[in-house]
Length: 134
Image (cartoon, rainbow, N blue to C red; front, side):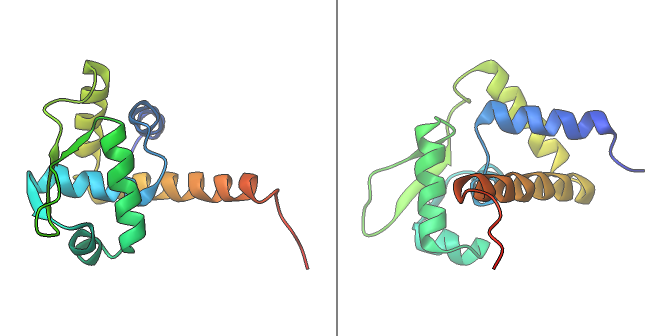
């Protein structure tokens, strides 16, 4: 059974509410959510997720700034990353929980990935002034 259109709209709403517009950001958030507290470096997380260290570092900075992830001070090149006790507000917490439920199913993960890739492509076009044909 396919996901309903309402689910796609809800995914977009929840991602927007959390401020997630980047696939690496979503993957890092989901990793930390599923693994609980993780003592790791951005480099190690990048190896596990298949992103560059810069992409993971940027995602961790963004998620920390949004109040979704907490991190300890660096010690021996490692930090403790964990989900914030609760999202900054109740609506964000519900959005996070709903997205994690959607992501449990393959169809839901594909929906998230496709939306975030489309958002990235649209953002790239805007940032680079549209199409440039040679």
